Length: 231
Ligand SMILES: Cc1cc2nc3c(=O)[nH]c(=O)nc-3n(C[C@H](O)[C@H](O)[C@H](O)COP(=O)(O)O)c2cc1C
Image (tube, rainbow, N blue to C red):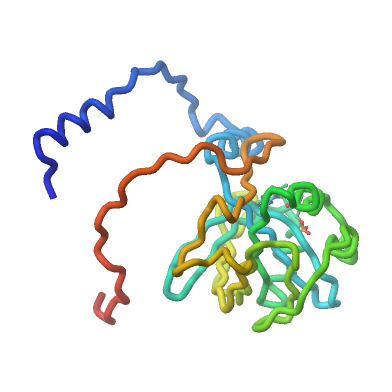
């Protein structure tokens, strides 16, 4: 719908922002580490997938991943980008490839210390879950246990793995088979973000919880439907 004249004037008013002077950085002049610093500073704040996986030998692994998003609603698909350490796959990637399942948790503010600690590089036979003395509970659709302390846990089955770029990064997509949501958080199908209190990742050594909220009237949206075979 076209905005009325009054609304259009209002939009012009709202969108009048001062012109800033911008520095130009040529992407091809940056190496992978420099690009990482730039990307993780500007793609912020990032949600964090706190992932449990199990190795073929049965070791329960835990690590955080902030290159994280959802990619589909039907089926529900989550995606995380997992890089490599000097060309070698991280335990999480190895475990997902071998066992084809994982659990994605959303951590809230009080979990910042164990979440951060779970990113320390340990050999595959060391369980970060045991090391950090985190309680687990059995999952219902996958063999990988979930963390009890997290307000949200999503049991996933591997959907696909897509390699990107020259450093061996891989985008892992998992189908959510089952959601665990803390009692009282899911009200009429919606989760109040402030009640959830999710931890997010900023550039450098910084995390954040949610700050000021800015309300905008939602737009009317055409329903998402499942496509027919011919699209
Ligand atoms: C908050 C946070 C977010 C992270 N996000 C990512 C990410 O998106 N992709 C990645 O490969 N590593 C990421 N890391 C680094 C991994 O957590 C780290 O390499 C970890 O040791 C991997 O553990 P694993 O070998 O047990 O899988 C992140 C670390 C932190 C602290």
